[in-house]
Length: 250
Ligand SMILES: [Zn+2]
Image 1 (tube, rainbow, N blue to C red):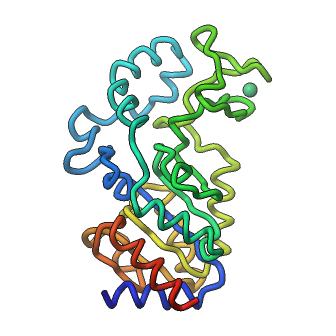
Image 2: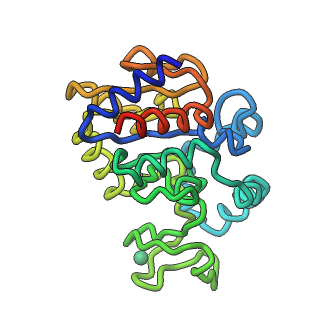
């Protein structure tokens, strides 16, 4: 595909390449998106906008309602595997091309595929986090002794690491996303239409700094107009081809 060769050429001539991923890349691992056709929220309704406030007011009740609402989804996530798109991005990092990866996904699949420098803008369902001191623990290493769970370090409330509606994105993660975008002279935008802030602003930072944008989406999206190259194909097919092309050029 010509667009993949064009994308490879841009990446090969760039100095600092980063990537932004979204639900589209996880769909190919059989994970339901939240929004759009077939989306979990499309079916069940969006979570309350003030979800985080409700959590703070009644952590115990919130946890019970959430388990009821998300239980099945959470369980299904734990069985999912990375697909060739995730693996290709991990490979791109391994060969020194991809510097970091910002994801809006919460499913841990980038780490499972071997990516290292991952910024999870909406957290990770496999971790707990203290809302006060931001300490994090893998689920299996954090014993929930009482509900609401409290932080052994500072006594703060502990919740799932995934970011709720109305909850601030952990500042350090957000700062690093902006730093990485400022440094990028090329960003691959894969499996996302990049319409939800703050992720939506990251490609635009690259663009404003005269960097290049490469879109990998199955169809046109809100970001299409801003991109230098548009690859309209599933990421699980196009990303492995892209890596092959880049390895040829190296
Ligand atoms: Zn704490």
